[in-house]
Amino acid sequence: MLREETGPITWVLTDGKAGDELQALSVAEALGLVPEIRRVKPKAPFTWLMPWGPIDLRERPGAPDSPLAPPFPDLLIASGRRAVAYLRHVKRASGGRTYTVFLKDPRTGPQTADLIWSPSYDRLRGPNILTTLTPPHRVSAQRIETARAKPDPRLAHLPHPRVAVLAGGNSRHHRFTEENIARLVEHLASIAETGAGLMVTASRRTPATLREALMALTSKHGGFFWDGTGENPYVDLLALADFIVATADSFNMIGEAAATGRPILVFEPSGGHPKLDVYMNGLKSHGIVHPFEGRLEGQPYEPLNSTPKVAKAIAEGFSRHRRALGLPDIAFPLETP
Image (cartoon, rainbow, N blue to C red; front, side, top):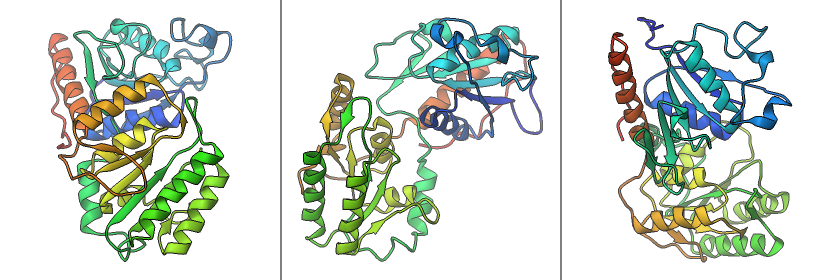
């Protein structure tokens, strides 16, 4: 299956959920690969049994427009509950040649894939399980370095200290109440009034009330709010920040911020989850995160980025797998931490 001119055939397999797909793509990119994106769309009754049951038979190899159309990949990186059955199916259909990687706990045990990455706050353990504190993501050291070397002109004029504000929104475990929104905006106003340059981005989940308040705040204090026009400056915000304020509803967002080496001030809306407590305690032990209470605090630290570590484990496992099958090995141009 190996294509000499382009490296191994690689699939990123998810049900299209943005967070799952971006994590898988980040690992493929760290391996220096350009994967094929395969999206599964199972329907009932097959979804009722996932992740334990079979794939939707309407998407089996050979079916019209099947997401599993061969040639089967040398390397398959999957994420998301609905992708589990499809990963197992490809492994069998390829005669075991495909090296399979699953990101996050598949809920079906360590035997699900050749290698599984799971966050350290989950309980999944085994000889083929790699755990890290932060999740894989696309904010690489190279992208941060490039953004710092050539600052985005929309941000370069802002005064120091520059503060990147990453505003999330309502989620399964968190809810932004009116009191939460008022308190967050008040805290941000406090640091803006000291002369700090605010660089703000919101997510699709950000409540309209919070979004409007952030826009008004940056307008009043000469900061920057990305309103969706022009190129997304997300990595530039992170790279140029002296401090980062992030809301606690997104594990990924805080993990991306940790790759900068800049202090992260975390604002917790209503709600929470025990796994978040474990995650935050781990980051606190490294001096990375601090509670956001309307002031800037914390010191720079060694950037924490788990993506290269995940990529390295995949490259090593892939090589062992191919040697065991008597297939030619391949070296990956791995991203440096």
